[in-house]
Image 1 (tube, rainbow, N blue to C red):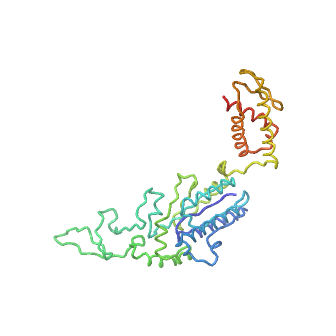
Image 2: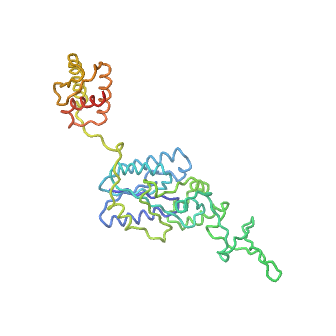
Image 3: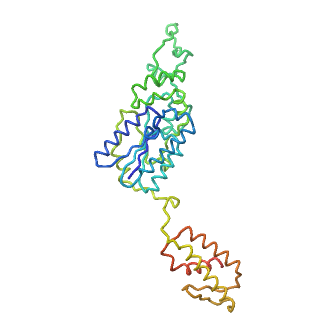
Length: 351
């Protein structure tokens, strides 16, 4: 059954949305498996994302857990950041190999201090990791004000009756906190977050994750279909997710992800014997043939137009090429036709 991949930075509501989707699917009679960081991290903490080697091990464990549970009967939900597009492509290949559907749910927090990764998939631009706005509520739609170093806002210097308006300090919005106050914002908002475990992320690690976050793009086949959910107030598009999981056609598997057809244990032996017999019969038949004759070899129904004498080295080279190709596509149904297939291959290769 399908694979649902959640994507987003910490404290964006991924775990709460995962539980919401799990309850909805279980109520419909589906078997749902949830794979998250806690199930593979064990007693380790979230600082694993600060170590590239440990994070690589974590991704491998998540991928292995998904691969073990992925089947055509159960629904698998991966609750993790999944911020690397290469890792999302690996998950797409897993679903494609299992011939099942996949969808991506991108969770965004409206007022994230490092906002550029959250807005990148809507704007298409990759700006700085921390976006700070100093526009006043009272001055929305007017000229942008001039800011001071201490975080106070100065008016746009209007003059009324010859007097300049004084500087008016104000309280900043959460999205207007500069990077220097990032730790205070994370500490304050993590108490109200849907993911309490995010408080374990140091401010420097949160900023690093925001900088290297690779936002999903619906133009990429491994990010389709993409559902973007902003905040916890916006409802989860359950109807669209159900349609993507149970009504869409699964992506066709690549040849590299397809299982090789079953072949008998003596397939290579029979292939070697059939081609060797054709080679011996052809060398014997051309001894009494003249250019223009049609050669009929024993054990075959195909005919070979004799145009010139053929050396054993040349025929052996074509035989090795035919064996190499046939080994890549073994099929028991072709066993009785191996001699005819080799003779037809020679007819096309010797022209």
